[in-house]
Length: 252
Figure 1 (cartoon, helix red, strand yellow):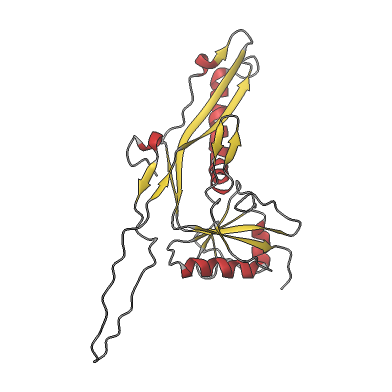
Figure 2: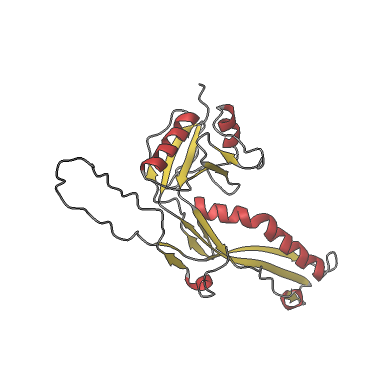
């Protein structure tokens, strides 16, 4: 999505979601007098997210690659890698010399470990249902797709063959940037790894990729061009996160 205001690209986004309050009340319609008082639910907790930048780079000598070709290549690198980078930010965050970005899954509700793939899907979908989460998503590494298929846990709509959904209709995202680790960085085991369930994942980004003009980043003392491509994003996960450790090597 495009930024709601230009200032959001630098200051982040905060809003009140519409679909994260699971409160409701049933009232008997009998002939006897109804006692008690109706209660009211307050506003939802605000959802917020801090902006971050995805960056790729390209270093070359113009002897082999002219500056126009170098700029084309750094833009291509961005187009090929930015989705993976955003997925990595969601699952595990980032820590490097330029700073630390926390994982959006770090504070997940941890469900009891699942002995098999089907048990994991059951637990995650039940958590979504119990919490009244609309637009729920299940998240897993790409390699888990083979295990879920082996256990007949998803199907693809004929009109959207690349879209995977459980038999209940919950979307499954197999993110290339997903790490399979736990909420506090627990490593993948020989036969188990983590999956997650969330509400909607909302993504905002700049409409353009920023690439400084190649002549301005050309170092004439070393005859080297240093090109960067950057795009600013903001990602918000609505309505909470659940995590589950699943045995991917079970038989059923």
